[in-house]
Image (tube, rainbow, N blue to C red; front, side):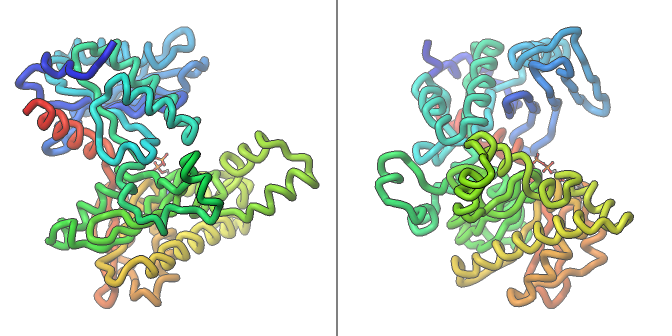
Length: 412
Ligand code: ADP
């Protein structure tokens, strides 16, 4: 079966894009107006395939959570969504389904209409993203069943970083590993870095192509990207999301000698190391308490917890060092952007990072810093500083917008 040209059947008045972000045990979905980013319906199915599986659907100001008697899978979650969309008479409004796909390798620098060939490529790229691409494919297949007449579009998390020059993406390993096996740096969170850079360009009142920015996406996963003349020229994550700054449960950059030490002296297996560096390290590993920034802030500020303070201090220091390192990539800098759950909300983290960036002429207006949280966006720098924006990210809107543009172009 090929899905190359199903868009012939798309209703002409269709205006909304269904955005799907499928993880190994979750499906996030939203129905979005691609022009103004308005969310018509959104929700999350989580703990799929376990007895805690549930699905929450938000519409206007209502929020319904449904738990079934037995564990359910992605397919069932999507069929519950379809029933809901049918009941609300929204199916006829959907023009296309836009999927977040984590790894597009070197092949996909642009959003792509999903064909059998594209599905095969996403499957092959699962070697580079074993936790993500297979889950993304499950979502694509389930949506093809649920919406057989609608085109499906893949928007890749790596795409924005495909403009990186060779000096940024080549590892200091034998070059043949890149040539023969694709072992290079790809970068992630591309959709988010692109969205916030576009918003910063609006603030600067100039085209994105003329903007030079550093963007820090700080959520459970964290990455820092440097944008030169509107294009990503370097980013902290690498072949996988494990590289770069320290994160909630990932350690980030690590001396490879530690791995040999753990194997040779402490009996670690490859699986143990995978779990250690991806699930047990970072904020959680140092604090021994939590990977959640809110919990650690409470612990250090209210309870004087020294390990929580150390974890947060290392976290901020490593992010500040990563930001400062990008002075090697730019000759001009318009400003710094904070985004992601921590970047958008933690005044403590922003203060701590910016305190370390005095040499780059950054300093904060603490009142503005305190006032810019919980979805608010704005410049929190003081008068003598370069711009420093907090910008609430909206990856779903980018996926909707890019899917709509691709669909329109493919119909011309
Ligand atoms: P993901 O990468 O999974 O999308 P998010 O971008 O939602 O994650 O970020 C989750 C992180 O944001 C968590 O560490 C959480 O503690 C932090 N966070 C959310 N709200 C706040 C807040 N009000 N203050 C500090 N940290 C916050």
